[in-house]
Length: 356
Ligand SMILES: Cc1ncc(COP(=O)(O)O)c(C=O)c1O
View 1 (cartoon, protein in one colour):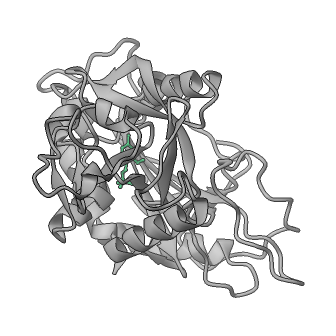
View 2 (cartoon, protein in one colour):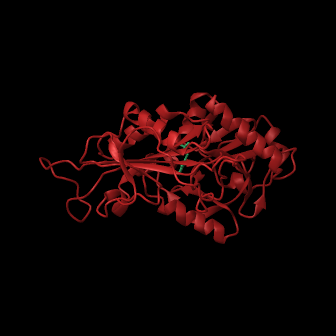
View 3 (tube, rainbow, N blue to C red):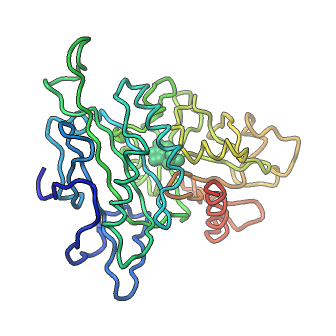
């Protein structure tokens, strides 16, 4: 590892002059607006050394820290991560994220990821180091858990009786604001989520499929990809769960479609705001009409009889109304198609209700 500071967890050191906002930041999100006379908050990272006690590690900018080249997270995408919303300096729904992280690690036969108790001082130190002028920060906290350095090449895991792999943990905090901006979408014809795979239930490092689906969407003139399951049913967005409002009920594809058990999706189910339903992609391709107000419609399985009145892409960092699918504008009945103000307000209020 180069350029980082080999430090235990502790109070922030004075940091150099703030650079310009990170130009690689996701274009869907904006860095927190700088306040006059205060430096821009910058991303900060910490990486542990698996051969040392858990609290030993290095702080640095993400582009200053590095992984050993034999790390299985790097070479095989053999790792898990969580993206946790931080609002006003507070991680939100952390327990739910840790629950998914730990459950996924068990499913994949990995060691148990760090506990909340171990994480809390690190998170506090990351936010303190990132703080600009005492401001409470909003942003994305990424927790990473790799299966660690491999003693030999190839994919094999240690056999019975061989020493276990020393898993590696690192985190990164990136200041940003949640996004509620409407998005144009394209249903991927090349990539499908696999409901039968245990990997679909885990937030692994492997985002190649999402990258390709978004690439396909961009070349079709849309901003974001929607993915189907292998049965051809609606599944999710490239990095978000999908929700459709039909006859006043929010519906979301079941996990059997291959979608990730998103923390926000889970919260919406838990609060009774959403129910699971297998959804035909034809629903998204129909123009909005007044049949959505007909209470005799069965919204779940007859795409010729009904259509949706709003569609959202939901994740921990925001909620984006879908304003077009495959080049066709969509919007809510009674609202101008794709009215960005109305749709963004709906998305934001839905998303905030999950954090309440
Ligand atoms: C494929 C996919 N589905 C769903 C989600 C939403 O998950 P969460 O609500 O836990 O942020 C994400 C988040 O990154 C994702 O990548």
